[in-house]
Length: 89
Image 1: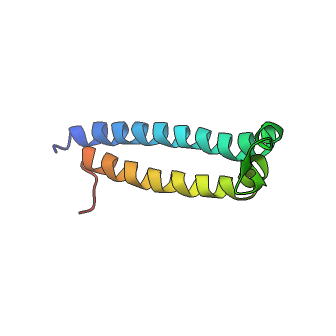
Image 2: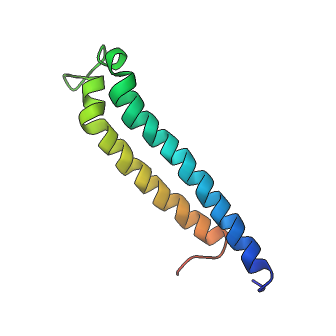
């Protein structure tokens, strides 16, 4: 990659990274705040492993969702690193 294209590639890389982070933060907010607080009454009508679903989201579902989002972010960032030639291989 030439030195002229490097700043442009870095800018494109950062824009894609920010877009991905904003999408994942919105999903995380929905899982933790939406499912654990806002929609808890509606979700409690559904049973999950013998517990009300809203309670499960408030206690453990948001944690599992967050861990899933972290794993997805790592996977997508590895793809993004390769796409923009910023990988560490």
